[in-house]
Image 1 (cartoon, helix red, strand yellow):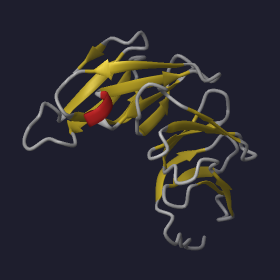
Image 2 (cartoon, rainbow, N blue to C red; image 1 turned 45 degrees about the vertical axis):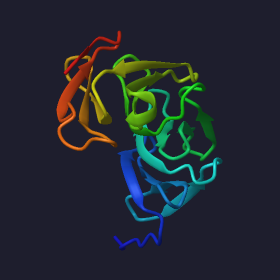
Image 3 (tube, rainbow, N blue to C red; image 1 turned 60 degrees about the horizontal axis):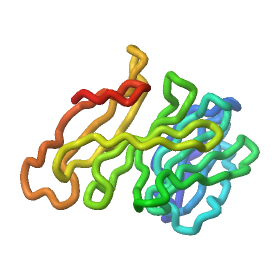
Length: 183
């Protein structure tokens, strides 16, 4: 196996793909990458320039779903590299951060920019229908998210931008597929 050097691409998220390869995001390279276990790399350019692909997961539809942190979108890539982008909320700018496949056949993601939109978790179906759930404390940020063994989703919450001390973050939260949140 050879060492791979990514110049200025900032690899971020990584996941096992449905095609036996490993898929990753290149935040500054603005690409989604695929690497085989033999080390062969293929890269796919994300259509929105400087979108900052960040986290990535395999969806229930066999596609790769990823967050576009600075582009404010959720991306979907087929294993052939055909990319579709979705805007989570037309009314508010957002910074999608973490993403995971949910137990309900949808993708769940976190929205980081608490100064502007609150502390939100989003759900997107494989057809692109989005619903946003507000998590509620001061200037905190919801970052990571994963499916739990109990059929709910679990997320991390930390003190966010604009916080000059403890602001109510530093929690582990749980959201049901119906949107009920506990922290």
